[in-house]
Image (cartoon, rainbow, N blue to C red; front, top):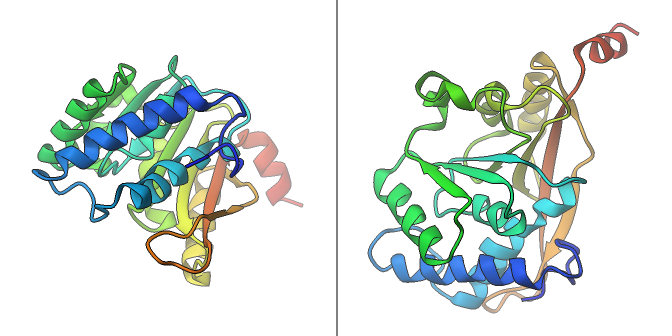
Length: 231
């Protein structure tokens, strides 16, 4: 796997790829005991979990300080953020206790000391962990819910100045989901940034590249947003 060739990470990113793959190997080993992923093949997992998640670099211009991954599942994409920015504090939110423990153990085994796991449903975070509200520079979500639902979960957690919500999606998004997501974003004072489309290498006999999409919303200043909407 060469994530740098796909434009996902900086040219000098071999160390961070090594950290991400170290976690992935620990996760695949733990998968024998806890159902973390349906992908057993290591090469396929490198592409569909690690490389796909490392595309977070395409959505950010500056290193974040606090990252929250909603509905983390097997640890990605939060793991990719933790591997990419060792000085950042990355919090993975995962409601299933067994998965949360497995992510914690795999992170420790692979040396990702900047990754923390909170075993909660994403909807419960503002009430149960109020210290995370208005803190995140970036909120991530991959394969958790529709765009509008994730917006509602993410908004209380976003810091107030140019914080971003990044959602991983397939190439095609229904018109209804897109419009509902944009309405929820507008109601929460989030601006819509251009989508980021990118190919992933074929895996397990696929003949064509799989195209993926990042949908990115950004916290905007309320006054500026109001001026645009009133024109």
